[in-house]
Length: 156
Image (cartoon, rainbow, N blue to C red):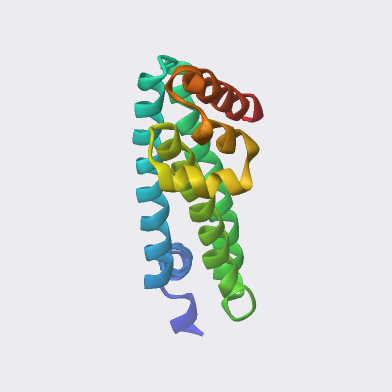
């Protein structure tokens, strides 16, 4: 009995962080991938905003909302995976992959708006606005791009 009680509070205080702050390598990989893809999305977003002259601090501040939302989502599923890894160990990885795919499509949209043809063709199959964008000549292309950006902004 003496061994259990001895240093009880120290053991208790160290057990909680050690159990809940130990990430597996695959979880660390998912987190790095999310961080990298969000950084790329932010850079591409600033590039598009400057190109179409709609750059403002309000739109740039949305990156913090995105980081907070993704952080809460990943913390929630990580808690579930940490409590019952046998049953819910897959949830962290799949939610992370979903976020990565979401950001990947966002990056494709921005690359298409910057003039790259292949992302524009891929998105043209999914979104009629991008189909119109890639089929237009240089003149009205800017108006369509701004409409695409406004639709994205209105949805957020």
